Image (tube, rainbow, N blue to C red; front, side, top):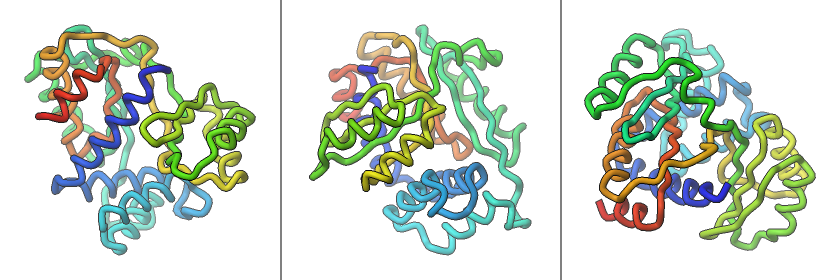
Length: 251
């Protein structure tokens, strides 16, 4: 679990950088639509949708675009293509593997683009199951620790079945088995604790450590994948040290 704090820090910095790109609304709309498809269109009953909407509002996404994305996810918008969630597994090179989650209305277009991006960088798509066994699917909650009582979060999360609760860089991170996602959410809500993030993610069982230059090469491949409109998440087993984080931020 020790690598999770680095992952959380990188994700927040990556999100800030992505916000500067023109495709941010496309990514947010897909995130909202997927959350609505999986948990319904009422944000009061769907924590993932509620948080996705809050992230969209923070980026000044128009209200009409948010509502349209919800309708697309619930199937009420018949004019839009039906979204499909697809997961690909692949090799990024230098012993690093990745699980790539996509949301698309055109499966053929998406797989062709993923294959192109990987092969251009010397990687390749992998068969189902050949990579995913290296990861565990976990429920992840992130709570801003300003003014929060760590013991209160710790107690609520552990009683709900969480495996680990840590605090670093101004955030309290809660990790649990994927099956505990709802119970942790309910426990935090009962304790009046509002997370900034709630999601199911793939965390590597073991990480691959590379020299700085090699690691940056792999991170550029990951960036190219994440820049695809159809890609919602790229989970990988590259170990990101403080040195690599600093070099990445300097690029």
